[in-house]
Amino acid sequence: MKPSTFAPFRSRCLPLTLVVLLVGMIANVAADTDACPASAEYNFLCGPGNAEDLVLVPDTKWIIASGMAPGASIYLIDSQQKTWSALYPADAPRARQDMAVFGACPGSPDPNHFVSHGLNLRPGAGGHSTLYVVGHGGREAIEVFDVDATGSSPALTWTGCVEMPEGMVANSVASFSDGSLVATVPLHPDKEIADAIAGEVTGAVYHWSPGDAGFTIIPGTELPYANGIEVSSDGREIYVASSGLLTVTAFSNSRPARALRVTEPMAIVPDNLHMAADGSLVTAGLVADDPRCGNVQGPAKFDLKEFASCPRPFMALAIDPQSMDGTVLAAGSAHEQFSNITMALQVGGELWLGSFAGDRIAYRSLEESD
Image (cartoon, rainbow, N blue to C red; front, side, top):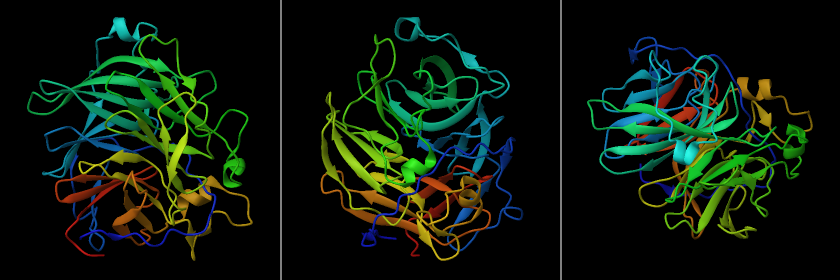
């Protein structure tokens, strides 16, 4: 499918997505087409639990997926063979702490309580990359891993962490070439879901650089439910999806930050945000106003369980970071077994979709029309 100009930016609705920790299924399996049948143009890889975010290991066929559920893994997916396995903690989690950079980190995460959320992967040299993971469970921290892709399949080694400030729960993370990090905190401790739905500022972007004592807020980035985050290739701008305003904002990478550009409100609840190979910002999410499930801004009090259990149509968009115009990469109708879409990743001629609550990952050809 050739992306078409994205027209259906709609009037402001003020929903958000939030962490839903549903237990995932853990196994080393291939796709079972009988138990996991295709639906229209979408195929499914069943088994990975709550694969909320996906990243592609550079110059390989391998996808790394988070597992946002107690007992879930960070998963490794073969995008060609359509198989998956548990990558971390797996049977023998590897750790080699970089004390020079992450000396303040108290040690590797407890594998019995590790929960992974947002992902960011920065390419390195010699077949190695650095994976940054929003970690929950035993602690709230950005966990850092070396990705070694020189063997027959990638291997992860934990190298350090940066703990979040007391009471702060991160959602997404992005990195700069100097090792600095930015992370979104959707809800500050004194804020609730209803505040974000009402369009009130509930969170912000936090920054850390090697040598800093910890993350500190970037003034000027306050938003209703700051969700997905990405940075420009030159490091001068930060892009943040607001699941409260249904927008993506381009901020200056400065202290304080300045809002430079913003999209029109979208028809979907934008979630994760990643830069594609062509420089566009790719996001995905659920349609905010649906006849069956209702408008998430509706008069009734927002109920997260109800929101997560009612399947909604979804859409993946590519946003030009300069014009902030969007195009539709793919769309899908409500699916009983696959909803709660959070992100989209282009891998060759395919688009892969993650979910914050479910037992499968979707993929489809970009050449097919909806």
